[in-house]
Amino acid sequence: MADRRRTPMNDRVAAAHLADAPAGLERVEGAAARIGVAVADLLRAPNGARDRQLVYGEPVTVYEDRDGWAFVQAAKDSYAGYVPSAALTQPFEATHWVSAAATHAYSADDFRSPETHALSHGSRVQVLGGEGRFADTNLGFIPARHLSPLGDHANDPVAVAELFLGTPYLWGGNSSFGIDCSGLVQAALLACGTPCPGDSDMQEAELGQPAPAGDYRRGDLLFWKGHVALVRDAETLIHANAHDMAVAIEPIADAIARIAAQGDGPVTAHKRLA
Image 1 (cartoon, one colour):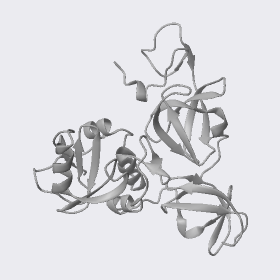
Image 2 (image 1 turned 60 degrees about the vertical axis):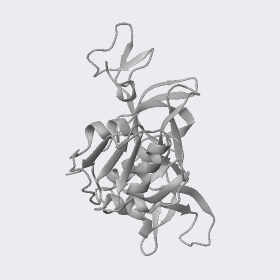
Image 3 (image 1 turned 30 degrees about the vertical axis):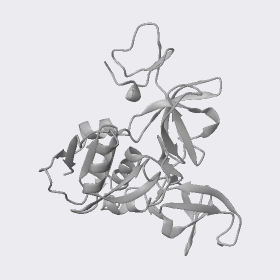
């Protein structure tokens, strides 16, 4: 059975490319849009539980817009769900992404001017011009050092994860305003140009190859049932976790013992990325 998390189909519509959609559903091609708010919850159903989040400028395909809710599929990982229709904006040509932990857009190219938007790491914007300290964008003026051109990637997912140190833990979170374990891993890998699904069970199944037991290397992934962490070095890892209610660094041995003691079991996989 297809995973509903990555299947653009609900009780009324199905993406036209789905070969095995049930009869009676309207087949739709979908329309391009982008997220037009700082952070949008991607919900399992209208007014339902949050599965993941999308940040400003992320591209989506809209398969249905009904009663104030849009049924969408995210381009970054194919995750499907519902966002408020008001959270969407028309497609625009994004040129840069926010590579800092977070940033602000300002009303003028002056840090003393009023800010107009708060943006998370990973947000996408269109740079229209500007030289020097600020880039003139579709949202206002953003510090140029906080932006990277689309296609320019970081080279160390652990260093990207460390940008989020102290970020509050948020179940289903995908932003610098709140993030969970799989959201942190996804942000770190996507920033480095490595495709990454949204949930830890998908990540365990699809990322990397098994690594030798106890041979911890920077960038390895450790999985538990419902949890994932990035290895920093032979002794420590970084993860968004409900124990600290934040992104934190923890000794690997301590984390393994603590998670087992709280009833969540042993490490289920140790994976190494190519």
